[in-house]
Length: 353
Image 1 (tube, rainbow, N blue to C red):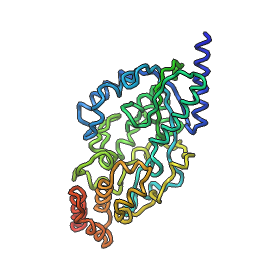
Image 2 (image 1 turned 30 degrees about the vertical axis):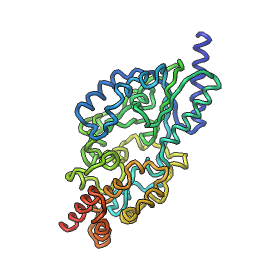
Image 3 (image 1 turned 90 degrees about the horizontal axis):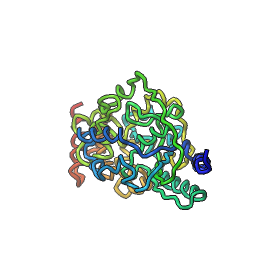
Image 4 (image 1 turned 120 degrees about the vertical axis):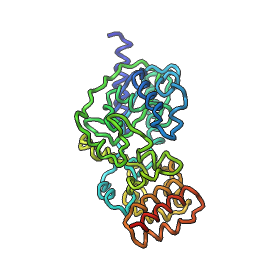
């Protein structure tokens, strides 16, 4: 082995050690070739499965060609960090129609900044050994194909629910990406282990997983409650249940999540008791309360009107009682067409019961 190759191999080992010290559970390295995934992405977009997520169609081929996003990129460092908070009574909350279900990733601090900060710290460690190297850190924050890159690097495989699955950690983790112009030894992909399992496909409340490894985002509750800005299709509203921000059903039933590990990051633990909150209490928040209680949270992405829209649907699906009806009536004249429409729909559900 040449001295340079030896040095690069040593640096790769050191990068993985630094990553663990910074709170990542796993670090792996891959190259920039996403040819196969580019074809899949192109087909998915052509079928309009992305709905109103127009950002998926922007940036040309930069999403699948890292060198176009950061010229000079040679190897990509992928990082994985667990986010599942301990002691969140997930199943009971989902089954209690008076409670608000918020996807577990959004209960604590917004992961974007935290992951990017840690990746930047990792890059600073690397500069000690490679002072002139160039990099860019990403955490779901640019046209980057995190899951395919992570799969290529061996952090897991893309499951039938289109999430990255790991034999030792399930899927309750965030991914971070560091584009670099370093030449490092590559890690190898692993084989997939979904087998004949169809649990995620069968459990999806809106049947958004239309085939193994194929998601129609237009039916996905995460898309409907977070990305969609207009009206939620009427036929899907009863299927959303009490899920007001995101959905975890396909993760909850995945057999590999038996091996998931709780997060050690206090920042990912629930804030403002959002892991056990009544729908009526959250629906009563004014905009200032919403902004205060979601400061530094991924929930901000839905916006206040999206928040009210989503809770109105959940209250429409809740058991009929005077308290629920009164809460909805209090918002019946809210000065936003989308909110009013969903409130009227929700009220109609209780009249018809």
